[in-house]
Length: 250
Image 1: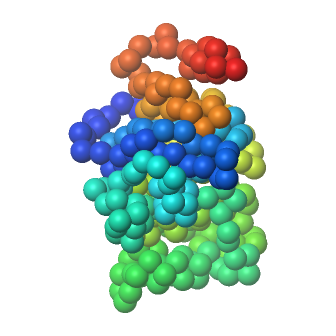
Image 2: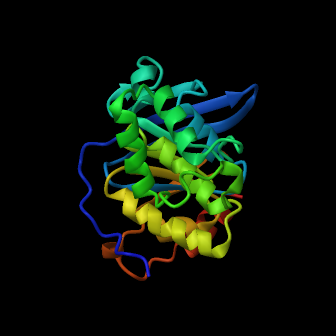
C-alpha cells in the first residue's frame, strides 16, 4: 500500500521550460514544449518511444543545446549559466552506467568526489544516501553482485549525494521485475517531499501511480498536462484521456 501522495506544493518553480524546441537536421524532435515543476512535485513525461521525452531531459541537463526556447533550473539558465544549473540536478539516465567491479560504497565515494564533496562531508553524504535508499546492507558488495533493483537504487543514490532540489529519472522502471517496481513506487513517494522529481515513462500505469501531474507527449509535441492528485477527483481516467488525445492527433 503506497502512502498518500497528497502534500503541499510550494509556488516557486524548480524547473521552468519555455518553448523548448530541438531539431536534428530537418527533423523536429521537440516542438515548442513549455512546463514548470514546483518543489516537492512529481511531474511525469508520458509518451511512446520517440515522443521527445529523453530529448527534453537532455536539454535540461545541458547535454543538448535547444534549437529554440529556454529553460531554467532553480533560477539558473541551462545555457547562460549551465554549470550552476547542472549543480541543482541529480540525473539518472536510462541504463545508468555503473562499474561492476567497484563496491557500491566505493562508487558512491568516487561520485561524491566528482560532485565536489570533500573531507568529512563524503562519509556523511554516503551514509545519508545509503540510509535514504536502503543500501546499508549492500554497500560493501560489488555492483556486479547487486540485483537490478539495487542497482537502480544505487544510481539514484549517487544522484542525491549533493542534495539537489531536482531529481531527473529517465525510464527508471525499465528492466525491473514486479516486486522491484512496487519498491520503486514507494521510494518515489518517500523522495518526493524533499525533491522535485521529473520522471519519464512510456508505461502509463507507472506515471499514474507516482506523479502529481502527467505531461502527455506525442511526436515531440506537448498535448496536455493533466492533474493526477487525489483531490482533483477520483473519477479521472488517465488512460482514456491519453487515448483520446493521441488518437485525435494521429
